[in-house]
Each structure stands twice: as C-alpha cells, then as structure tokens.
Image 1: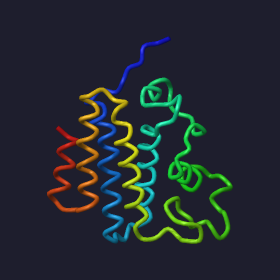
Image 2 (image 1 turned 135 degrees about the vertical axis):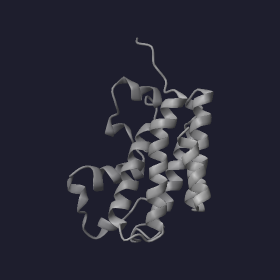
Image 3 (image 1 turned 90 degrees about the horizontal axis):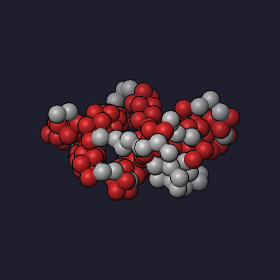
Image 4 (image 1 turned 45 degrees about the vertical axis):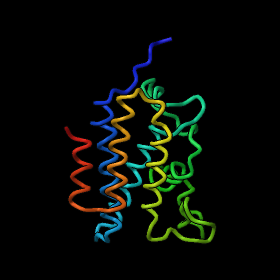
Length: 172
C-alpha cells in the first residue's frame, strides 16, 4: 500500500482557501442583488460542489483519498451535492423534473428555492467543512478553520473589513 500524502496547510490555504473565498464572494454578491444573479449562483454552486466533494465524510472516503486519483460521484449522499450534479454539473434527465424543477435541497416539497437559498447552502458547506477538520493534521485543520470562520463571518456580515479578514486568511 502506498503512503498517503495528506494536504499541507499551505496547499489548503492556497487551493481550498481560494474556493472558500470565492464561494463566499458569490453568495454575498448574489444576496446583495447583483444584476449578474445567474453567473453568481452558478459560481457559488460549482464552488460548493468542489468543497463538498473534498470534504464530504463517507465511510471509505476521506480527504486522504482525494490524492489517490479523484472522487467517485456515487460515493456521495449529500443532498446539495447530488442536486448540483443533477441540475448544474451534468446534462442528465433530472434537470427537468416537471413541477419540482425549482425544488432545492433545503426546501420542503412544494416550496420553491427562496431568496435565501445560497445562504442556506453556505451554512451547509461551512458545517460540512468544520465536521471534517479532525481528519486533517493540526496545522492544516487550523488553517481551514481560520478560512472557514472568516468566510462565515463575511457571509453573515458583509463589509470591507470582513472581506479583508477573509482575504488575509487565504493569502499570506
């Protein structure tokens, strides 16, 4: 069996931090009512998918397996991840599901997406990341926790100060 190379704190800050930062940016800009609603939503969904793919905790799959040649879509049972794959990332028949085509994972049956859909997605992504911190080495976990906390703070209270804090957590 080959030795597993865990992600370094620097790798996580540079690559995962980048995904978290621009995921948070897309969520905030979308919530503030940009005229670019569709590309911002798409950006948030694609970045959420990347983060969930990296951090989703399933038996037999973990962060360490990311370095063994990628991921398998069938290993995930996360409702947001599956929804993003079906509705955005892949051209599958599930894209058109009749009356429920606007049914998002956070909503009850019959309730459409709602204006806070990306805020709900952000909380789900941040909680998923935090649940996986124990799978990382201490320095790496501290790095990801710092970036995630800064991103959550920015999403909850967008301001130049919280954006700068998030950027500082990602870029040294």
